[in-house]
Image (cartoon, rainbow, N blue to C red):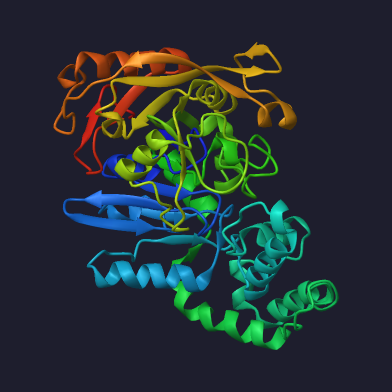
Length: 427
């Protein structure tokens, strides 16, 4: 049962789309198992660049079936717009499957997200304002709307009315906003039913039968390990589980069916939104990483915060995900630095700490302890094998591998699909 999980090993934006797309031609199914359109992947195929927000990256690989699992929250308008855009560019999207158990991002979820974030002021979390958190909250509070509800108007109406009973009280009395009419929401949601119907399926059954038939299934996480609701830098996290365990609950497969867990690591570190970031740079180096790396969020459009590689975070990701391999991306961005700092530990209140502190307060006050590694000036974008890399680039990769605790099996040396060095096969 060749089931692989591919996920971000930092704060997201590590280049998961490139890695998934690289494997897409060799796998039968690519499954998004959590998150919503608050995550984005950029995939470059030839001279074409595709920005995917909700769709699995495998949708660009002919012969691959892309799946949106039950753990994803779906904004129907965003999904249909994304499908339309790909169809206009000649991409076949007809094989897409959507779990009937996936939850719907309703218009009132988006409204609550935006007004509550503004209400927090300087204490805001830094959400994308797309209704992701409120939708997951509705799911846990058992007042959520699922895809399958679009096909029973009576049930849909009852659920929307129940959800709005409380939300309208909050909107009108706390936030001084207008109440939202249930009938308008129901009408809008029903308008998506026929358009989504060809894609809706029992994806849990489909995926488990595929694994029993020895099909290759790739589970693709959005965001990254440090944004996990349970294992990330809480409260500056997403509202779901992008860590490896989330693949099981978010797609409906048992843990014994997972054969490999691949972590995507950027050769430096970035994050979007608020929260602690020990290696963040506020100088010319940080600006250079942002400019050379094109560090702007695919979905948010926000500039990413940039810093040097953090081996403490990488080791933590290895542990909580049970990583078997790393895919190191954007090594080419570091070309040109005479020396490259790597964070090997933290200093907290005068103590050297080599593992991620469990205390939010300690992590907030962590200062990076750097080890300097020699850089390189040669262009590495044409490298096809590890031996093609400059000696200092090879040494940098080997050092990161040793510090991170899992083998680096592939290296990205450019944004293109073919600009990747494969050291060990993932399949």
